Image 1 (cartoon, one colour):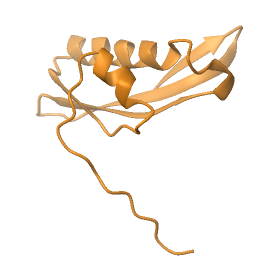
Image 2 (tube, helix red, strand yellow):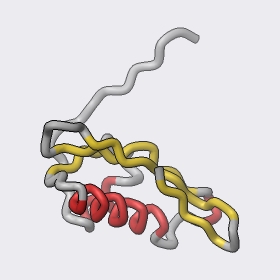
Image 3 (cartoon, one colour):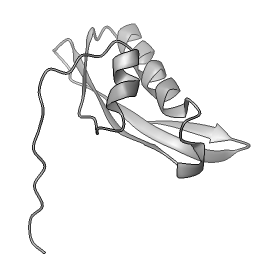
Length: 91
């Protein structure tokens, strides 16, 4: 897990999930406090986790991104391979 701090307060967090025995690692849980959106914090967390994954030997990254994150990921060189369909269960 990584956390971005501003003046000692958390403003964003995310995690890196390596998949042992494969070249893949997942980037999950990226979220930024609303007041800090648009300042490059999410982008910095993605880039940091990508560097950590590469340093650990992972050469492929998987991200299940929202439409809000897609432009940021595209600017960082990610390519969309597929889409998912979210479902809501129950009331």
